Length: 284
Image (tube, rainbow, N blue to C red; front, side):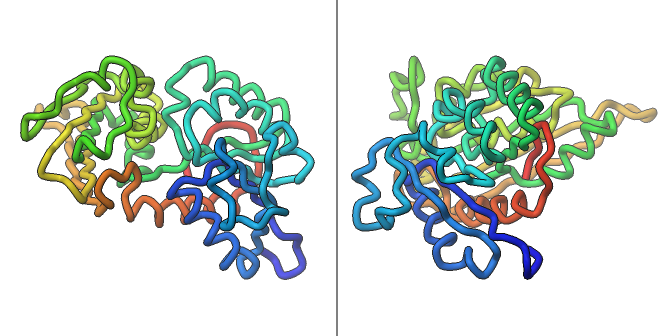
C-alpha cells in the first residue's frame, strides 16, 4: 500500500480455524500492511463471543454493504458463496476460500455475471494446490492433456455428505471417490477445494476433465497428503511430458485444514489485496 492511500477494508465470512487465524492476522498485522478488518460474520455468532470485538461482529449478512468493505473473504462453507456471492460482488471483491462452490455451473455463471456487472473481482485461493502457476501456464500453452489430484488423510479429517458419508473406512486404505472433480465437490465440499482449484487452474480440462481421488488412510492421523499428477500430449518421439508432486501437510487429528494451508491462505489474502479489481475469476 502507498503511504497516503486509505486502508483496504476487509470483511471475513466464517470463524472456524481458518477464519480465526485470518482475523488474528488482520488485527495484529493488518494496520501495518494497510489492511483494516471491518467485520466478521459466522453462521453461529456465539463462536465469536469473547474473541471478536462486538463492534466487528456482523449479525446479519444482508447488512454487509453497510460496512463498506473492499474485499470480502469467504472461509465458511461453499453454500455461502453459492447463496450470497453474487450479492457480495455488488459491494466488494470476493476471495473464495471454498472453491468447490464453483463446481456448480450455475454458481460460476452467477459470479461471472455479477463480477462483470459491478466490476469486482472473484479471487480464488489456491489453498493446498502446489504448482498452481505451472499448471495454469502449461494449460494456456496447450500442453496439458490430463490432470489428477489425490487427497489422502485419516477419515476423521473428512466432512462427507450424501452416499460418501455412509462408506465404511475400516480398511487401512479406502478409495472413497475417483472421477471428475465436479462429481466429488457436492459430496465432499470441505475436502475437495484443492481439486476445485486445480480445475480452475486448468480451464481446458475444467471440473469435468480434472480427476479427483479421495482416499481415507488410517495411517495419516496427523497429516494431509496431496498428490498432483499431470501429463502432456505425446511428442514426436511418442513420449509425454509428465510431473508428479507429493505435498505432506501436517494437521491436527480430525482437522479439515492443514497447518501449511493456513499460512498459504494468508498469503493469498495479501496477494489479492495487491491486485486491481477487474471482472472475472482469478487464482491467487
